[in-house]
Image (cartoon, rainbow, N blue to C red; front, side, top):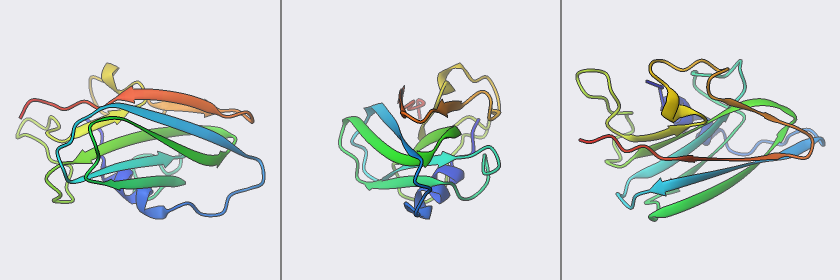
Length: 142
């Protein structure tokens, strides 16, 4: 399963100045549960994928239940978008002994994953006019 430390580090990058040709990447995250902790959203290029850092991100303290929408201005290109709900606030993407995630998570097309994601599996093209994508946060049974 995905390593969501990348979502956290991408979110910490903040919104750095980007090229004038920035296009909106709107990400709607459904199914957020009010469990406290922090919700991390990370946007990464292929070169940044599954590493610390990213091109854009956001951190939400104690997210409310329901849907959350985030818009990032990014240069045209292909990006992965991931979300991680660190509901216990320990700063670690918690996993069971089996390796399966315990924390809430989402990636583009993530519900279809059956192993470690590739960039091609979980990315979207952002054209000049922008794009909107949505995913549902997956909360594994604890």
